Structure formats: C-alpha cells, structure tokens
Image (cartoon, rainbow, N blue to C red):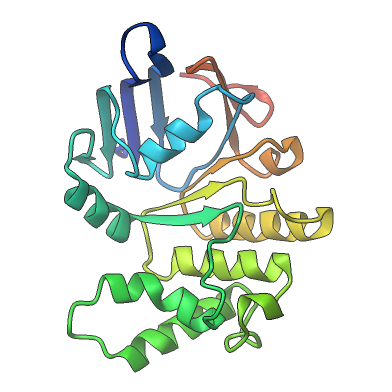
Length: 238
C-alpha cells in the first residue's frame, strides 16, 4: 500500500529582492520525504540549505511552487496559520540550542506545551510531561538545572527534548552538532539515530560528513538546486 509522503515539495523557488539585485536562493527544488525517514541536507554556503530549512519549518514562504506537509498545503498560508502548523507539527533543534538562560531544563522543555495550552491540561501535568521527555533523552537527573549548569551536549539534549515534547510530525535539526566537541556531537547523533529507529521523521542540515553518515539519505544542494539525492552511499532510485 502506498503511503503519502510527510513532505512533498514541487518546483519550489525562493527569490529575495527584485530586478538586478534579486537573489535566487532556491531554483525549482523537488523533494519528497517519507514518514520515518532520516534525511540529511548538505551543500556549500549559499547553496540554499538555510532557505530550504526555513520553508520546511514554516518560518518562511516560497516565492512559487508548493509545499505539502502531512497532506496539508502550507505554501501560501498566512503568518498565524504557519505559527499554528509549527506548534502542532514541527520540533526544532538549533545549533545554538536557543534555551532560556535563567530557566530550568524542565521549564525550557515545557514551553511548546504552554504555547499550545488548551485549558484541559494543568501546569503540573505539563511539568510531568517535560520531565518524562527529559528522562527519555537521558537527562532525568538534570531537570532543575539551568543552561549554564549543563554541558553543551546536555544543553542540546534539552533542546531535543523540547522538540519532542509536543510529539511533532517532524524534527528539523539545523547543524545540531555545530557547537559541540567531537564526543558530544557523536552522542547527539546517536540520540537522533535512536529517535529515528523509534519512527521519528528527521530532516537535518549539516556541514559535517560524519554527522550525515547517521542519516539514511543525503540530499546535496548546489546553487539552489538538488545536485544529488543518495541513500546509503548510492544514488537514490526514483
């Protein structure tokens, strides 16, 4: 039985500016990501990686083309609609962690739940859900620690827990090992690999070939186009 893709992008373009100063960041990108895939996106600076990630994350809209996320066309939604999709469907992991510095790990993880508050769940229930998610990423003994009391790898685990707590359709990871030493980076990639094995869909932008080896599929961008789409070291069969 055919399964609908979680992400379907067709003829996607993104142009910044107009006329002689126009910058074509994406030039007709086509992309399909199935539920449960772990995809790495690579490419040199200026290849369109960040622009693609922003559109995938509903942080920006394409100039033309379509982006369908879990069966819903989000290409031309307004800002409020996109914010709702982000809160419901997407978990973000950033290179710089983006944690609130004076807030405990548990309360950082709670934030997406509070944004989606529906009135039927108490703060205590949200807190317990945040603790359970921290335990799932190996930080059950750090729930009351603030970011400055955690290592870089631990801070990134908090960020991953925050991305998971809403049970999103997809995790978008933007250079998740970029600020980490080699050992911590490897631990974070092993954690992402475990999440993938549990059925999570992950799209990760990275410059690091070793990080990309953890993905089951690697997409190379160049000059705003897909230059290669490979699985397990071999060219992907369409």
